[in-house]
Length: 285
Image (tube, rainbow, N blue to C red; front, side, top):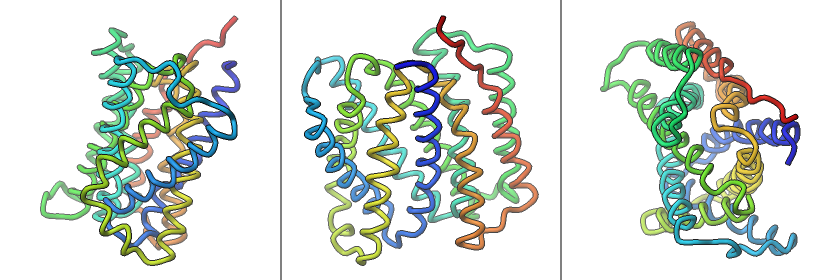
């Protein structure tokens, strides 16, 4: 894959991920049912695509790669559960901005596990993210839903950072469809025991929203995202996710009348500014 194609795929993935909070808000069911339904639709779409493209889902698997897929799948499940829980508590805007803290966690995790020393720009980015997060809620009161929703969203961002960094272990060795399918199977297995009952009780319209969430925002988006990581570093990939909270806030403002406060806008501006400081990977010669 060329560098330019990887950038294009990552941009499309960011656009699709930006719709995640919207579909999660439109679905009236519980977070565990949303996550389970999302995984079911994603696995179905990925298996059908693998059959159509004649991509063997078990080729190249080893014990180490399976362990990596399992761990990333668990973090992916926690990421989804905490993100949709944050949306239910505080709305799309705050949840999406809290999740947007994940590039700061990427810097830390890549420094720990890949021994990649953070630059001055990376450290500045972490500082800006922290400052932005302090501005988002009106006040830090754990009894307030906005604050607790933000904290859940930050945990969601950490888990997504772990998935991003962990996917570097398998990107380039396994087909992106394989990676996405196995990780979504892990999510399905994790959530099935406590989400099945609520999923079968969902109203018909929720099946539509979760179907779109699973096929577009999960199956297709994760294939594009993982494909890009075979060329791009996770910190470079995070550059494109600066637009995700922008999309989330604007669409939620239009659909759900979730008007952002001035503090929220300022905090979001700091977080997005931090993401835009991500060092761009040099183009290959």
